[in-house]
Structure formats: C-alpha cells, structure tokens
Length: 229
Image (cartoon, rainbow, N blue to C red; front, side, top):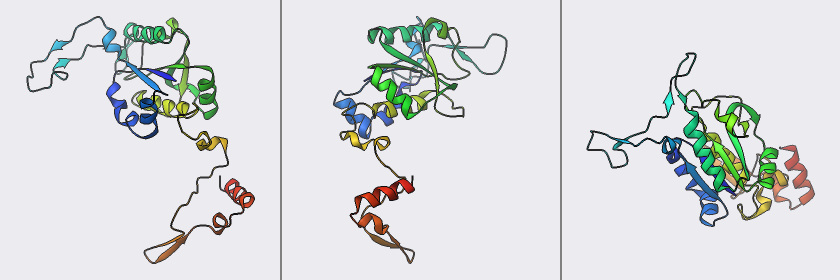
C-alpha cells in the first residue's frame, strides 16, 4: 500500500509514522508514504532570510501559496494550481490507479467498512490535506476525488485526519499487523481488557480480574465479551 500525502506540513507526520506498527511496516516495505508539498510546485524560488542565526533549511522564506478569497471573508485560501500539480505528480507515480481523497468536514463519513473497501481495491491512495480557509475549489474540477470526513467537527488542517486514515486503512493490509486476527473488527472484542496480576490493591481497595476470564470456558468468555461491547 502506497500513500501519497499532499500537505504543507510534511514534518508533522514524523512522530506518528516513526513509531510502533506503522514504522515497522514502512521499514519492512509493506507500507510506503510519499509527501508532496504544494509549495514545491509554485514555480517560485525561496527568498533568503536576513536572520543568519537560523538553520539553512529555516533560513528560507517559504514560497507563498495562500491568497485572500474572492468575494471577501476571513482567512486565506490555498491556491489551486500548486495543489493540482502536486496531485498530478502523485497520480503519475501511482500509474493512474490511485484513489484520491479530499479531507473535508463536509465529506462522507470515514468508517472501517470504507477503509476495508479502499484497501481491497487500491494499492495507491492520495490524501489531500487542506489548511487555513481551505483549497481553491477549482482543484476538484481537475481530478476525480471524494470528500471524506473523520467526524462532525472542524480541525485546523487535514494532517491529523490523514494520519488516522493511513492507520485505519493500513490495518486492513495483510502482513502489517503481523497477526491478521489482531483486527478487532474480525473477532469478538470488548473495551474491557485485563492482564496480570489477577489482583492488586490501590489505596486500600482490591481490584480483581473477572472470574469468567479465569475460567477457561471459551464459550462463556466469548458471551461475556459480547455483553461488554
């Protein structure tokens, strides 16, 4: 599975993709993530900053990509052309077989079923992360894409939703979890889980593991789990 992420802030993904299961999947080449910063597609060169104490990377003024909205209104809008060029490059890398997802609070609800369908049908997924007041709507006239929302709320950008989608879709790819039965949606799961020790005290009160989980009676244990879902 190859994710192509269009974002103004690729470094924001470093900590999440650099840990645990996703890190291992990337290292094992079962998962690939490529970033495309629309600022790199403006056709403009960076302008050197006068602040010499900054690092070489920080010492470049970022190429401007946001402009005031036509018709008035607060905030700034990301220009369509640099985003379109970034998507175009990602789409070419995919061989023209990518699913393009535009992250929007007004989009279709993202669910496990949606993730499963995407993982089954596509090897390449392009995620378009908005910022500020959004991306110039003309970009949607250039590419066929689907608006997707991770919930009924508004975030400051599409980076967190992109991380969530990569995580959920990746879990559906065979080999990434190691044991495919680790998928909670493929088995009877419960939000109440326990491990050793069987009993411990905290501030004078004793806390025990439910006896049913120690019984060894598999059918009754599964029935108990269903009751706790």
